[in-house]
Length: 393
Image (cartoon, rainbow, N blue to C red; front, side, top):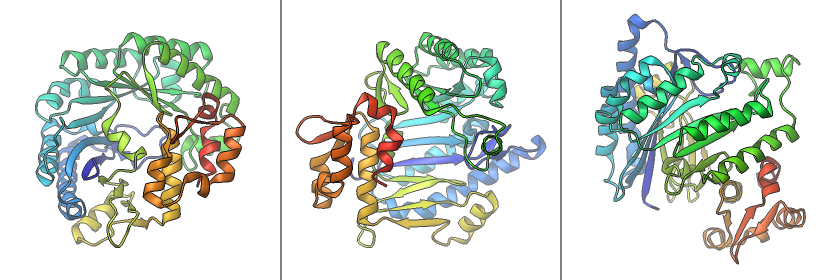
């Protein structure tokens, strides 16, 4: 997999902007102009692919992920054109290609599910349900209700999708422990192959972030959030879902191929407004680089059209940056930090580089040794993962 690549395609349009969202998104706008806007965006994505592909040339395509925004607002034939161009740009993968599409529960998107599968080639859906509590969905600014979620889920199964991921949000607004239990019970009854559970974060600059800063919204306490995270781990674990990454659970064999690339520091070519790439190492950048596209559509389209590089901001990683990433990203995953692989890559052991922090976390019971070459978070460490991982930045 060292010579593989994952491709992320960001489609920023949404019918409404959630007040907690900090992604590069914009309102879909006037329906009468939508078709032209969709076509212009597809053309720009294809132009960016042609511009960026040489940095990833010769690699086998391992995954394709359509995210947003709400990428399912695009027609199946638009996504098919992008998929075909991406597949043509890289070496065919030895394994079946994972193609994921983020979907929100809505009648328009439900009608397109068969086309997403047959025409666009999507074989994995990530469904943004968030909660089955209508009052919480309304407070979160979501555009759907619980019934729409159930209908979309059933429609996805009818369309033949056998790999479905369900998103839940927790520690959110007026959510109670009983409310979380109800969400987990209904989520498990839906029998998803994969579950992602995200704590509500009040990002600065968002409506929720401003409200929290002004004292009009009170985030959950760290203890309250940790209690909910423990409850989620226990409930999903008992149902056969392994917590393979801090926010992600899966039945065996259904771990997200694309998302794992980020945690394992593998190359990802990210296309579209605000998309973040993980460029592979080369002679000039022995530890690779990170590239962030402009967050405004006009600026991104102008940069793509001009063919200039970089399109946005590029960060060339130093060895120190790469070592820090290897530690905190490795610790996010169930397998933990492979000390032997770290030594082989950087010529120094993680305990030599971060000895004081690792020793302290081992003594405090936040880290444990797993075999002769691995460090991983304990159960308590997973609840305090942000604190632990911050020590390596």
